[in-house]
Length: 259
Image (cartoon, rainbow, N blue to C red; front, side, top):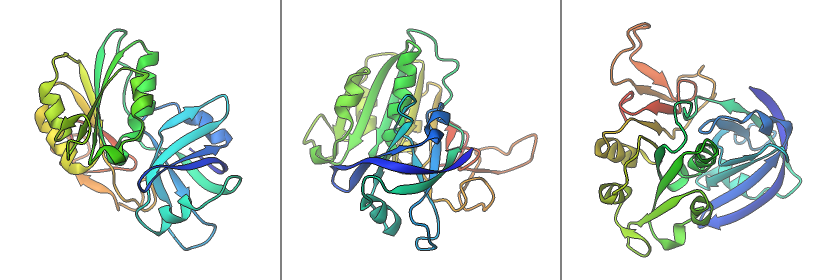
């Protein structure tokens, strides 16, 4: 874990209220595990006071750059979207437990299911899986065609299925509709997105899988207990009945926590 001021080298709106920002700094070279996140201090002041947890979409080790995709929802992300090239933000990371891919073998087929701003961390995951020689099928869920992003990037890595709630592109409905229509077999799945989507995906698939939870956080390092979630079963060794999303997660085995 490092603390570093990173320079903004690119910033653009890629869908309504969805921004892509690239940061440069030595910290990028520590981001080897897909699914981890960073904690970003937007301003050098107490307004906004808390850092913002942002998932990692991509990493370029050679350029020492990392790419984030985020939705503008409040004061912090609004100010981040207004920052110009050359400005700096203070970054703490990498944080959390990412997606485990050690057991994935060459020619294994992996299913990735994402919705909204839960999609970005799956891109870095897909790149790592393809690097291991695995086959990747990706299902991406959006409200409408105008909200779609990263489609072409995922298409370079494997089969992509788009779902839209209004049917303006791809499959009409939700990601679970596309899951039910799949004819390919897969050995493991990975998913990230809104809690309602995660519950539906978890209930739709019997294969082993991993879910990544999105949550508001205070400290990001497991100290403040602002992001706890209930375990499905108490930890036998520790007796704990909860997990901290920032440090025990954000990635958990499917069925490990109550969504």
